[in-house]
Amino acid sequence: MVEVLVGPASKELGIKVAQELNLQPIIVESKVFPDGESYIRVPEEKIDKELILIQSTHPPQNKHLIELFLMLDVAKDLGAEKIIAIVPYLAYARQDKRFRPGEAISVKALAKLIKEAGADKFVTFNIHKEEILRFFNIASINLSGGSAIGEYFIQKGVSNPYVVAPDKGAYNLALEVSKVLNCECTYFEKERDRVTGAVKTEFKKLNVKNKTVIIVDDIISTGLTIINVAKILKAQGTEKIYAACIHPILIGDAQNKMRVAGVDEVLGTDCIPSEVSKITVSKILAEALRKEL
Ligand code: R5P
Image (cartoon, rainbow, N blue to C red; front, side, top):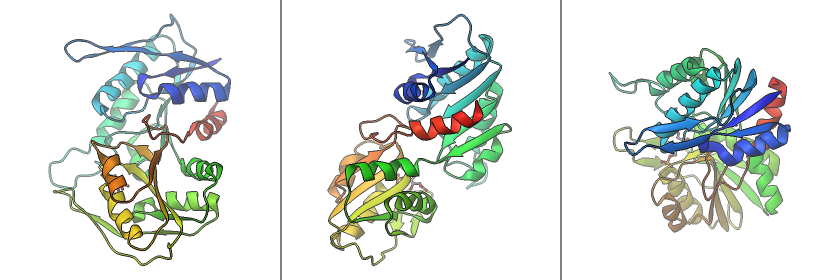
């Protein structure tokens, strides 16, 4: 039998995936000591040889990462021989090279730690850049939640849709969504100042009057990327604007700022649990895991 070890950062998604696969979820117990240190307990004396472990690493990233390492370590102690580590959102992925001399390549360090802690296979969703997987010296899979976003809008009965990516990097993901919705898709040119974080988006004339535009990105963090695009769309008579992403990090009042800029609703997937995570990637994940088991 295979079991699913469900970490505190991915509780709902972990349970859903276990249900989809007809497997037993083991819910990890966790707490934080008064000095800030994390505690993990697996409420079993022994676990199966083959294990699926799920724990996302959204903010507070460092806490969720330590929990992930502790889960991997204890799973090995309790008898797991092959662990498929599912990290729906991998933190630090945007620091994937030395942009300035002397910088740590953060995601390279994380990949090493995940493997050393006990992962035999690594699964994630819409990692910032596919090339990052080369840092993992174990088999790794990068899934995409684009079709889940598209299906969500079909269920919602969206009319007259038009999909846009706020930058070239998100274009493939946006295309996946537009394919499900059978509608037009385009992208904007964006530039970000590495030091100040300021975002510049080039104006683009689009035929979006009276349309429902879905802006699709892998991550929404401060919301600045979405805000620029929403303003351009609003000025061209867009009827309704949705901002949909795989990883809704949503720092501070990002959601509110996007609304002020003209976004009617912000949506995300359960790769990161949040109040906007109404789209589940559980079916995509279960399907991928079926091939692995
Ligand atoms: C960047 O390349 C990513 O695809 C996102 O566009 C970015 O992380 C969004 O960040 P923010 O919401 O802070 O503009």
